[in-house]
Length: 216
Image 1 (cartoon, rainbow, N blue to C red):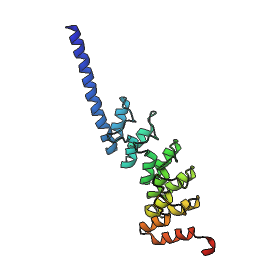
Image 2: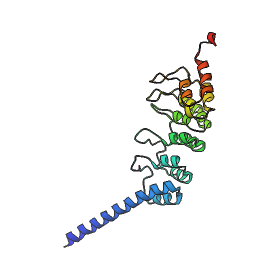
Image 3: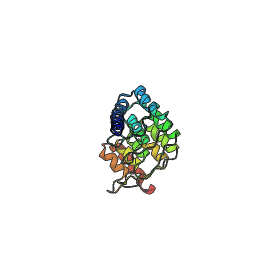
Image 4: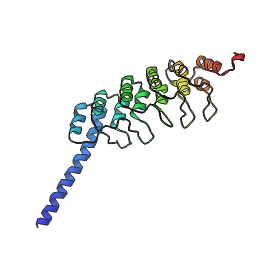
């Protein structure tokens, strides 16, 4: 009888813990979406792992950058166990999302904490060049990002900026050594990208930079 009671007791504890953990998991990511730092801090104080991934493999810090949840982002970055450069399943980091969204303050804070400004494949500079804030582009370049990293498609940040990023990002990249002569795997140049985005005047300027000086 005692063995049965002991087994039942431990089973009760295990089931209760599992239900509690499942509820905490849902509450945690709900709090991130609502920018509820109070709820997030409460869960973290109870031992919830700040680096837990959501069902799509995204970290809470990545989601806070994507959803513009600054209070939650601050709470997460204040936690001693946070992995502020944690990548998702496709290699995207919180810094890359902050760069894409043009969140200069958060990009600055992440870089100051040691987030990588450069890596193989898609980089934070690619994302910044696609985004709306050229000051993030400037920040990454000043902190050592290569001006011409190649994405898996062969695209460079200059190509992406020319097609859809902030116009002011193009001269910034050029000033830091980005090469307008490079072509992606389809043979397209930055000027071609500009044309595909309906930026014909910019395309003409980029074309002019690729011509030999004698023919200009």
